[in-house]
Length: 506
Figure 1 (cartoon, one colour):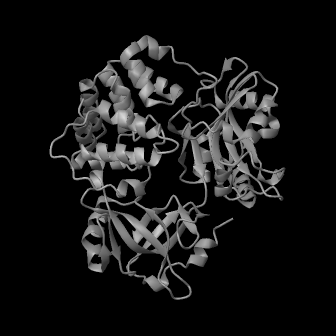
Figure 2 (tube, rainbow, N blue to C red):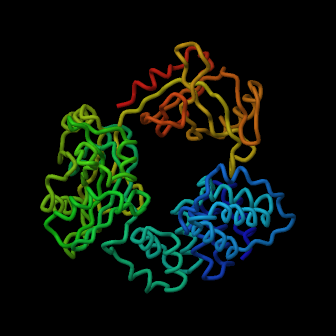
Figure 3 (cartoon, helix red, strand yellow):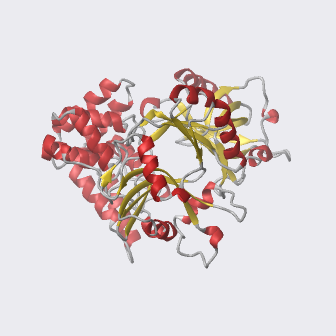
């Protein structure tokens, strides 16, 4: 199959909001692909490179300047082979080899293919080919029951593997997929609650309210002395977290799969900043006996215990199993609380330095890989008035519109606004059009990707918090920022200051 066919499908999927239309486009592509090409095509259109890290950053890609090919000639196999070469380039001469491979690849690509490859290789391929849509397309193209395909994806955590099973093995292969100790499962996700009272009322009376820790999601598997630890994205980090491995090896069981959070605590038992936890994933073996740097696991679910799969059992049974195994590792929780008791638990979580709480139905099974109403998250929301410093041109459905905003906080010393992050979330079609019409009137300069503005426009931003960051000059970065509205009633001099933003740091 030619790469151009994949690129055309990516463009078509990005251009529509219709789930039905997206599925039809993807199915048409998978129907045309050879069986051995399907896992690769599925991975790419899900924004994933099967080879993993290629050792290529944005700087290397932006330095490429080959003229685009006038005619499409690249194939899926050729690109996949080039990615394999990039991923395997190590040691002396690897920089030169990568440059040669990149040059050859992009020199053979048309302009649209170059754009697709850049976005794929930098993780910027946002086209709306979400997992649910791709699962629908795999089921349709393979002629297999949707429920079987969906469950196989949940239990393998891999769209390419699911596609391969559906195409090569059919219904029998899909049905044979089960929970396997040592193979990561797509994690169950939560939806934001309207309010704590609403979540308790909706899910009650049989529910549990957990602390929502400001840590990193982990899934832990153990078979005898073999322990594996996976991140939320199913990345294997076992070798980087020997402290977690040691804790799980001490549990009184032979086989287990646990879901939870990990974080590092300070001397007072309060959570350290989120970045401290994330930085430990790369330095777990270099603690020099300092117990304050240890990662501490806290679990809120048990999917398997000593040969018994619990994933389809109600949460109450899974929690009973977890409590029988490791009560000291349970996330702090209250069962069947009143609204007042749930609010007290939320206050306790916030006072302890955590994000908020999770409200969960005790009747629900573990919906792997899905965001269901049976789990709802409640945490405070912060809003700030920030200055728009620039906007990047959008891609996919947003092509031709100024989209991703560069945001700055006011310098209390009177200097120019200090950049604290970017966001494209919360922008309606109406706002996108307004930005595209209005921003050039305030333009200071531009490059091929961004229109930079004089600091005049103020926007209200909602965010979950901030974190320390060396990426931005203010030393902080916004977490999960979303546009609420523009504030034409405010000037840049009335925007929130960098000190106010820093005040959210733990």
